[in-house]
Length: 126
Image 1 (cartoon, rainbow, N blue to C red):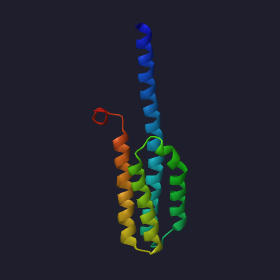
Image 2: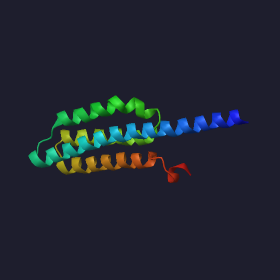
Image 3: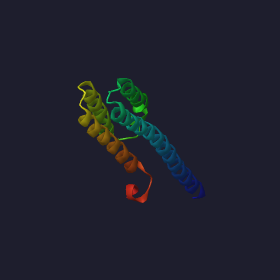
Image 4: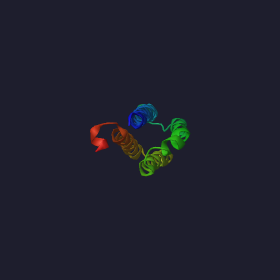
């Protein structure tokens, strides 16, 4: 009986520790992408030029982490972010400033939504 209890406790503790580590990794990567999107938005506001180099860096950052995210995040949510990044790139190519602002705000909202959804709290457990 004691042996089974110890095994169960070890499994539960490792799940909790693993969840906290994944949550920290996700938050770090998503915050980095959010900051880059905010920087892109500010650079468009200040110079009225569309910096495709920054957008390519954001896309590269996303693609670099995408495979890891697919292991533990919902694919539908990840697809929404990827769609938003494509929309931002498209808006920059046609140089539609208002459209790019809206799409950046949507992308940031979706990223923040996924972060809140993945948090380890009682609302998300039950």
